[in-house]
Image 1 (spheres, rainbow, N blue to C red):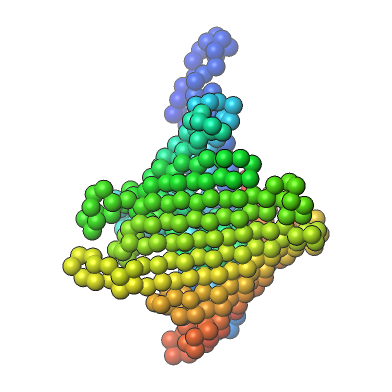
Image 2 (spheres, helix red, strand yellow; image 1 turned 135 degrees about the vertical axis):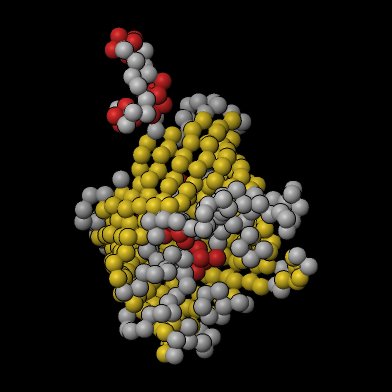
Length: 379
């Protein structure tokens, strides 16, 4: 009816409508609409916040109120009962964080805007064994402990591991669930980077592509308190248009249930490496970045949960603002309103290599402290 009101479609006669379902109505009835509105109020303690920690989506948010992003998802999931099932997903971002996502195509004017296509793919299923699932188009990366959508992470601020991970790819991804405890995915994409329809040539041959694989093990029900715990790992290798080099990313992560009611723990490791290589007649030196994080969550009450994260990151090129960084994040989440995520978070970043990367030019510090409130409505 919304499409009719906008003049985009017209209805058949009443008599015809009573006899057969309108095809457009039939399609839309299986499409779901969801998303969220994500906001924060952030205070970087102290004065002089020209130089702040360089974790993902941190830019421009110090000492003020922020509309981070509005997400809208249109999706028709693949019907599990259909042997040759098909569906789609369109995942859209609007707001300042859309500029930082990096998926804007090479054809976009200026390369950035307050709008981005986060994902857009056709979902297909083939009746092979337990069912072989495909994503064709632009889809999220298959590695990482945290995800791009902030409201679905244990903490609001992103980890350094997420910061060095690939974000999204344009290509084809195949996934297969061998049994209840083991599944795997393999894929091929244009490039390592998130830019939609990006190509590796002219730097590489036209046939050059990015390859990826991941697997996940889930502890079976007869493993006692460990039942439902997960162990996953993955690798992505390909041309990164941002720095014009071939990059390899390795990831491993684990989430464990514990015998303590309400307590879960986890750990993740990310390694991003560039080997020495020649590009455009010049040499690119080898470099690396790696990040290790431990996670814990404890449900204090039915509505109150405490999340903690400790991490260490290092790199050969100071991609974290310093050669070595320690960071600790504590998040208190309280579910007061229906459909609303409300949490209070404290984060401490510390330069461990002797440098002073925080503060402002002429007055820098080894430490940066952040106190923020995050309110997000999910629909």
